Length: 309
Image 1 (tube, helix red, strand yellow):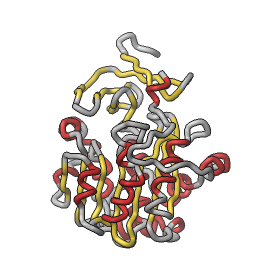
Image 2 (tube, rainbow, N blue to C red):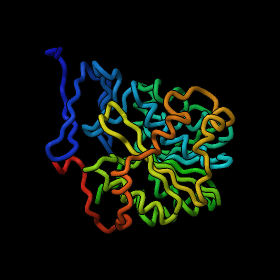
Image 3 (cartoon, rainbow, N blue to C red):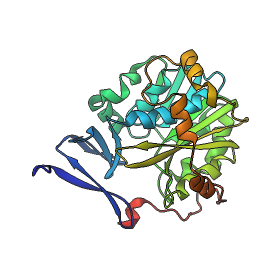
Image 4 (cartoon, one colour):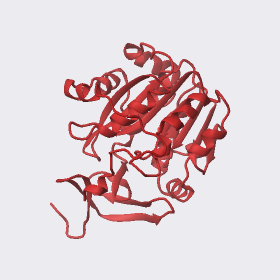
C-alpha cells in the first residue's frame, strides 16, 4: 500500500534504470561545503542516509557493507595495530575496526566536519560511540595531504571508505597511482589496503576494474569481493589488497574471528566470506580485462551516475 504522504526520491543508476525509495519524514538535512546530506525514515528500511540523492546506508543492512570493508582486510594482516581510515563518515567503519583486539590506534581522516557532527548526533546506531574511544584520532582535512605528511611505515592497514573516483571529481586524487604510492610508503611490510569499490555488475563494473588496476601498482596482491546490500538493491564490491601474497585465511575465518575480534558480527563469518569472494564466472571474466590506472590529472572515461540523468 502506498501512503499519500510518502516522499519519493529516485536513485539514478544509469540510462533507463532508477531505484525508487519512499521516505515518511526527514530527521535532518544539511548542505555542507562538500555534499547534501539527508537522514530520513523509510517505511521499509527504517533510518536511512541519503547523500547527493543516493542511498548511502540503512539501519537494516549497513552491517553488510561495513563488515566487508573492514574484517577481510584486517584479518589479512598478521597483527594490525595501527589503522588509517580515509573518509569514514558515519563512524560504522570505525566501529568495526575497534572490535579487533590488536588495534591500538585508529586515525580517521574525513574532510567533512559538518557531516560527521550530524552523524554523531543522529546516527548513534551506526557509530555506537566509536568516535570517543581513546584509541581514535579524528582529523578533519584533506586525506591526500594527510598521507603526504605521514611517516614511512606508520600504518598497518589503510581502509578507503570514500566516494568513487569519477573523472574530475574530488575523489580522483585519492584513487590515483600517485596516491597509492603514498599509501605504499606509509604502510609497513605487511601492509594491507581495503576499499569500497563501487557496483560490480555485468553492465556496471568498469569503476571497480579501474580501482583494482590502480591499487595493484602499489599493493600487487588484490582480491575482489561483493555483498548484496538490499537498500542499494545491487551487489556492492570491495577490494582487499596486500604487499605480500594474501595469506590462506579462507578456511580459517571462524578461528581468526574467535581469536582476534570482540563483539558481535552479523554478516561476516566463514560462509559469509566464501560467499563474498565466490564471484561468478561472467564477473571474473570481466575483471580479467586490462585497464589504464587512474592518475591525478588525466581524465578517464568513467562518469558519475548523475551524468546519465
